[in-house]
Length: 420
Ligand code: HEM
Image 1 (cartoon, rainbow, N blue to C red):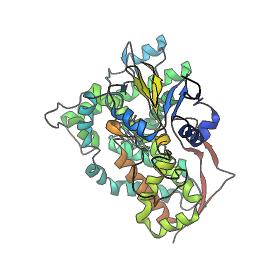
Image 2 (tube, protein in one colour):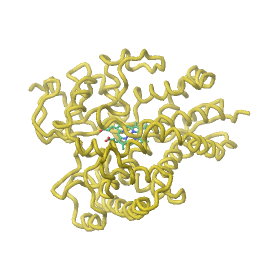
Image 3 (cartoon, rainbow, N blue to C red):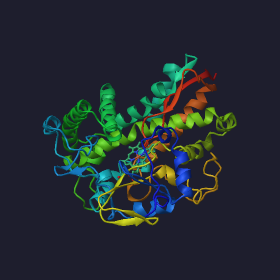
Image 4 (spheres, rainbow, N blue to C red):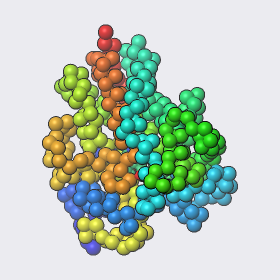
């Protein structure tokens, strides 16, 4: 295979982290595949990703397993040091679940959590989410500026996910801290010390949730955790604690930073496009279309991973058994064969192919309806209560967060006036 047919990419290069879209544009002109020997094979073509996502037998989601069995979220797949192993021996046993499971196990998990995260259950959260948004705005509306991420876009999903999982609000920042540690383990190459911290977070999280799971089996409450603990659909037995713990980890990991960055990335689009900002103030019914276009154009999750279970090929590029394959959902969103002029942000795009900001296929984001609802209410309340927005470029830091798998800004400081 010539180098031209198998372009080499360095996914950890700062230029790609700061702007992955230039890389996707280049790969779309070549064979739609880029190879990073240290990380895996990146796939950016829309149709190739559709095939890959459906082919769960060949491209497995069980990516964190070693000879000890499935690993906890964030611990990483490199050999685990003895002292880290000792800390993890205090964690509750887990199994591959949901995000790291393949059919038929995945199908069962998805079915059992579907009611808890169904559009109906999620819609019922609207008043609660609106109340959280208003309370956050109340806390800074008297100031001339807001640190959008720290004062609004971070606490919003942290509060919502804590409520869903029945975490006391007093504990929610500890809970966020565990999530951040686990995310860093998924994104960064961990130092030995940091890996110990991640392992401790896993044990603390289990110590926190195991009694709460058991309690809800005996006395269900009205939170979504109770629904997940007790769901029994189509004669399937309820999820076990071993299954629920990794699912809770995944909701914790998937539900925070993603939604924060959806709000942050969307606000940057509006700050750079005053006409669109005015249109959404006048026609808030267009906010959902704007949110969908942010998910296409600047998606918070750029890619995830699969492990090739057998030799194969994608777009003529050979894929070795055991190698990592990386579906770049955000790359598919910039495929000119799927979206005309993909580089243009256009909330009036003709309906055609659906974006892959929430993935595609059996693992399509389980929290998509929740994320959409949070983002819609976030923009509705911000535009309803505040006006005269402008970015304080000096005080902001628009460097992208240090990950090629996620896209978000470091600090967004925004001037505004309160609407009377
Ligand atoms: C803007 C916000 C979000 C984005 C961009 C996003 C993106 C994604 C993507 C791309 C996947 C597919 C992963 C794959 O196939 O490898 C996924 C899966 C998942 N997401 Fe989200 N997500 C968001 C919010 C949420 C929220 C709020 C929750 C929690 C309620 C959540 C829970 C999950 C879970 C549990 C999965 C795994 C589903 C499965 O394996 O069947 N996500 N998400």
